[in-house]
Length: 137
Image (tube, rainbow, N blue to C red; front, side, top):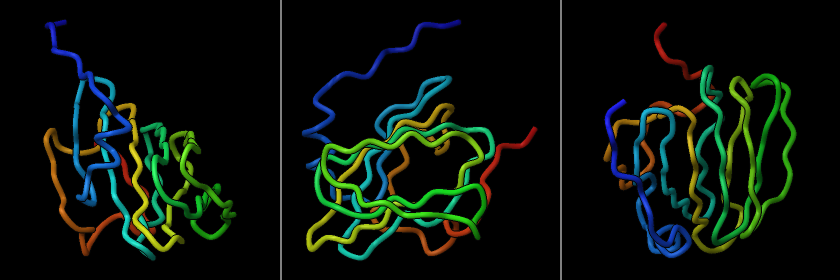
């Protein structure tokens, strides 16, 4: 396998400074580091990744983490700065900002979920809402 430059830096500072809905910081062959910023009342959108595990950590703000075996059978728990969530592939999940200020988080996908270097300044109007996301076989 060819050498790839690793990512390094202050993940806390970069996450808290990020103002984009989604910003891909690093993409490797088996993982991807992404920053996210949710405004008050904003959410990622209920989704499940067929073949991708996901780790999320909140650096600033508060909200709810929703998860379940299907889109119709979920439960929600409160989350806040310092909390982490591990989402196995196939699990339906969402994060919603319930606080009065922005919610800043970073997430690690195993394997990559978005295009390298992707920046979405605002939440896309389509996708990431009640869908199973998978990779072609």
